[in-house]
Length: 179
Image (cartoon, rainbow, N blue to C red; front, top):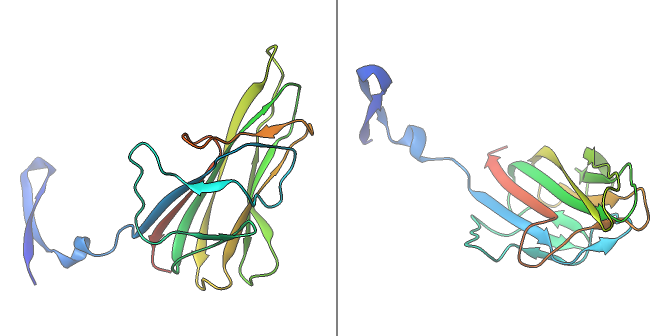
């Protein structure tokens, strides 16, 4: 086993086996986005999804798989999931919800995380607001542990924003470590 010299603040030094901190770490990280916006509710969001492909983006590991709005993980592990939505509407819209839904049996989805963004119309055109929700998911089986994402807008004319060259509504998946 090789040793690496460790320098710690205040002049204290020592050595650690390299295996203590070289192994492990983030083995999968990726980001996806809605490339075109839509009006009204979506449960689940199932179309106009793309992996980020601009501005020097880089993925670590294999890609998530999506089928009819259901996301499958490429590998087991503990995953951090972040869902960010930008809403806009040309009216007051008090409760615009974004939801991460999860299943551990490939069948029954429940709300794992939810947030909302209220909009008080303040301009002559669309007014925007953004919200984020997060969930840490212990994926012990990639066949049964899956997620989906939903939006529920208060005003039926409310739009979930999307764009093909910048993240407006987007999804982040980071594998934090082993289960």
